[in-house]
Length: 249
Image (cartoon, rainbow, N blue to C red; front, top):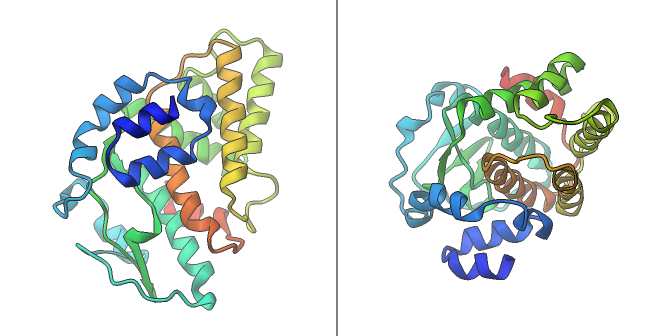
């Protein structure tokens, strides 16, 4: 399945991102439908004509130290700036959920850092369903605010608990907690390998328990994979909780 998708998807960036997803996921989703949805983004991925008016929170981004450009000049990132660069990337990840859609390519070549985060978004725009986007926001809010009720409600709104008994639901909650990571999330070290492992475990659970998966999950996976690929190279622990709180979702 992976080789077939790589042969079909010409753009190098998407081949790279799909390569980060666990093989099990590639066999668990309707990729024809996903590719149909991604079609315009794939064809225009090398274009510099991304319509920034799609981002409704540009002012908020700038107030957070994130500035949009049509292209970036890449400077050697100073080790002293690793933490702030990483935190702003994660902040951008969360802030994008305030828009109708996201620019899902978060690889390092789209960014630079000179006291602020400079972002030249590729034309890789994807619009989540309203329910999916709002439910993912609720999921994050439930997790970071230690609101178990909101957390569980979000999983139910995503239709991930349909037909599951209490034991299976508890197993699913544990899998998502493992994916988010232990502790207070103030010193998180990002690893593609850990991402692949936890994301794959969640999808294996869905497959074994015949839980239907929305195609939006595949794009969320690509979005996360591109972020992880950027952060992993820094090998620097990041205060993810602080970034989430600053996003004020």
